[in-house]
Length: 148
Image (tube, rainbow, N blue to C red):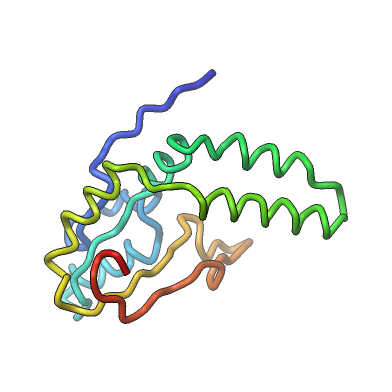
């Protein structure tokens, strides 16, 4: 059995992103950081890194649930694919965020608490020459307050 050690920080400010961080934060955040560094106006913000996702999966033992669901898929059987996707989605949505992750995000949020914010997704392999993942995840606009 392989055990991963996943440590924070799980977030990084857009202004603190390094060029080699793209695999940890996604291309959208890396590009926003690049624009900021080159004096384009970009609203300030921070990114939740892929290590947060890894911690979430590990703490909730979701890797086993995901693998079991994927193993039940039958070739060219749309119903089995749909059932696996639903099972994985339900497992993810029904799992709590680890306390240290919630604490880190909520500690950063008061700075933005009086503003409306956007929560945007970004795949770490988005917009590859052979595949695009744009539009796969949800975007939430005009949120106010950490609980929202």
